[in-house]
Length: 213
Image (tube, rainbow, N blue to C red; front, side):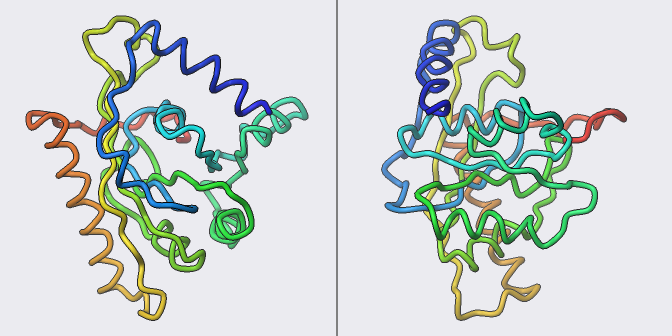
């Protein structure tokens, strides 16, 4: 209920202040559940990507500190978010999204770099995809990187989707196969960035000392 309610408010508001999102290759999205994998460029990424694919709904990982207090916990869970201990991730960081993907109609969005301050891909998304039996769908976002920069139509939001990447469940997810899948994701990110804007280049910002994302 809250998920739908916020989409119907946030979506039109963003269109008003920044124009409609330009979405590329939406026909690439498969039926059923899948995992959107994208380079993490803004704290707004999950919101903007989810809005571009609605009415398909998603679950999200969020740092556990955001769930402190009954109101915050209830609000985030009503948006299909679940807590993750980023400093000491346990088995639940894999088991929870796998369970959601297999037992609900929710897909999920994962940023393989883990944060906005890294360009190195990590292996969690591929393992979750293999265990849940769902494809990885590469995605990139170009546009304003902060809320304040959304005001104005000169820099519209742009989102592109790539060909699904299917993880072979019969193949061992060893270092070689993991590297192969990571390269496939990175190649797709590069291709999608060029499709939207051949001159685009994202510069990874330095991580602030007090930022936990």
